[in-house]
Amino acid sequence: MSTREGFFDRSRTVAPPSWSRWLIPPAALSIHLSIGQAYAWSVFKPPLESSMNLSGKGSALPFQLAIVMLGLSAAFGGTLVERKGPRWAMFVSMACFSSGFLISALGMALSQYWLVVFGYGFVGGIGLGIGYISPVSTLVKWFPDRPGMATGIAIMGFGGGALIASPWSTQMLSSFGTDKGGIAETFLVHGIVYAVFMSFGALLVRVPAPDWLPAGWDPRQVAEKPLVTNANVSARNALRTPQFWCLWVVLCLNVTAGIGILEKAAPMITDFFAHTSAPVSASAAAGFVALLSLSNMLGRLGWSAFSDVIGRKNIYRFYLGAGALIYLIIALTQNAGKPVFIICAVVILSFYGAGFSTIPAYLKDLFGSYQVGAIHGRLLTAWSVAGVAGPLIIDGIADAQKNAGKTGPALYTESIYIMIGLLVIGFIANELVRPVHTKHHETPMEAPEQAPASAGKGE
View 1: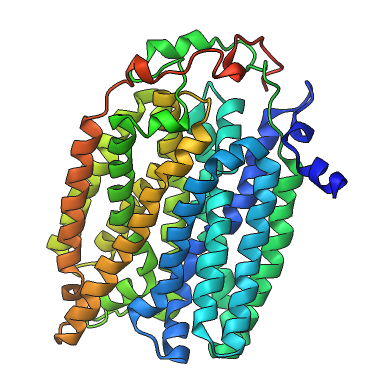
View 2: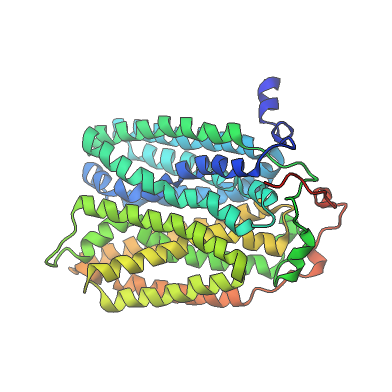
């Protein structure tokens, strides 16, 4: 036991002087590409609904619970992840996420849907939360000079996970079948393959030495940028600031506006064009899910890296303001043409993904890197709320409209206008963000790892 505990101990993961920081993003990607499978859940919705006689809301339940548990486990486990280190966190994430699939496979084999909800939603959701925050503070410490780019590289994996999982899951369902047994086999393969892939990240990850800095980088440079500080704020004190709660609202509403579409992407594009001269096939709908995943992934890297140039507050003005206008275009054009609908959805999902990858850098700007992982974990409770609200709005209104005899875009028009309103509120919350008051800053004795440091190898 002592040997096993030693292997996962944070002190065993301190990088030697010759270690390249560019090995850390691949370690983070191995985790995020795996847990990003959650964004391909819509591929399972039609088979689950037909084989288990479920409604749209019923088939969304495992996904919703997984997002709830993501936020809760990230919030309550954030401080523990900071203390135990990224290797321990990545291993726990792998164990929970893979076990969730195995439990779900058993549930389908036994025709017990509650086991799917428990396995994928509860157990797997814990793996999502711990895995999601596991590399964040490590990346920020390795890339203090480019935090937006660094977190974008890793967190883009979460958005890109569905780019792999969507066609992969579709092919397995085609091979194994879309009945209960076929779904069970598909879940089983997912659990085994992801366990192997995620183990790679746990073995590769390292943390920098306390006195390490990128070669040629002066931490005093950050003070020259608006809203950026060299001071540090603890996770406990961050909760007492209005800045934390403004960003909580920003993240919650930005996620709500995107996650509903992402969760129902395949059925949504099918419904929009069902009664036109060019209906959407099941394979084309799966391709649409993959396209949204690609947009989600690229937006996380591109927009987040761009935020290093124009600033975090400005980039969120763009996400929220332009997002509201694009939703309005969808509402006004409806199913007039597939290219307009697809382009609008792609851009919205790029903003959705970018919001996730930019938020750790925004937190680092405001609160410092001292406990940014724990602060990020607490902020992800906003994702838990959005994970319920987004699908509930989209699925709930669509089910109600369907029961009222409506079809096509009419199933979604009302929910789209709700999303526009949420994005406007998020825009206002972002405008209220100001520098954190000095009364919340930690003293050097309280944040010993932030003492003056010497330059390291850098690259």
